Image 1 (tube, rainbow, N blue to C red):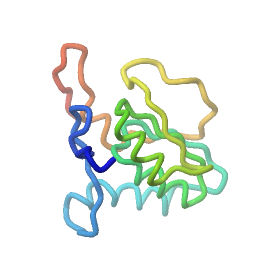
Image 2: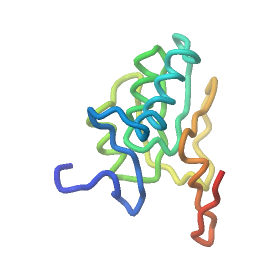
Image 3: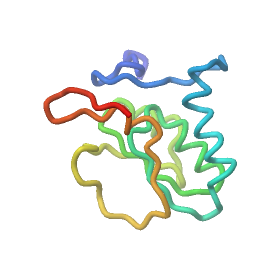
Image 4: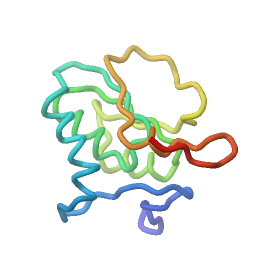
Length: 127
């Protein structure tokens, strides 16, 4: 995806991890690191929706979970599949305002998506 600016692909704003550790990375990657260290158990099944670039799905999968990542961005799904995809980290396109496919999950994560959920009229609702 060399021609795509992943941070703004598909008209969305998403965090793209870098080697720099700052307040932005603490608010994004840091939360997933905490979840992976404190909540994930071997064999868990999880759904992460609106996951940005897939790093959180990869962190949770690396800690022992099988994680499905749902996002509405085709560019983000392509990037995440290429960068982080594997047997325990899978990514698919889904409209998060519609129903997601039925699946047997132990828990779901929506670390950033919930506070940036668009209403049907295009305005953002905040949390």
